[in-house]
Length: 136
Ligand SMILES: [Zn+2]
Image (cartoon, rainbow, N blue to C red; front, side, top):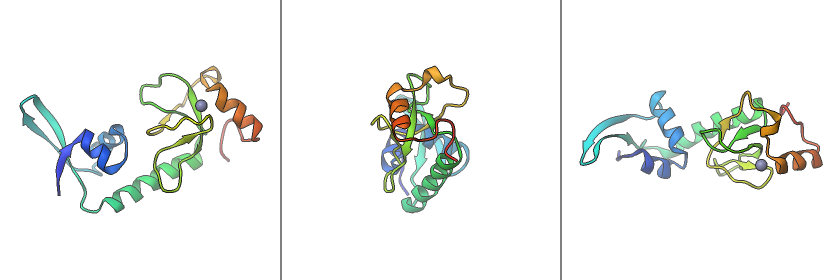
């Protein structure tokens, strides 16, 4: 199986680099530190069966989306607004937010203030009668 950088693994497996790092930490992906001209860096082994990998990931993320709040950050640094997660798509792992923003991934927004919420997402959720706090 090919061994690639985290950046390349992110592209090949169609998930964010953050997810790749998380999967390396939890053992879902194997990786090793390799020395190079620019110092050492993590190299990730691409699984032989990429389909299995993405199915697992989709199950995880769908389970999350169903049980938790619809409000998510679209970046890992919790910058900008919290968006309302409309769906995760059937074929894609990329999330779609109500306001039309399309994120690379979703990051938990636990503890956010209502003032942090995207105004367009709020208006759209109200217009469609969606629950504001949970998906239940
Ligand atoms: Zn939004």
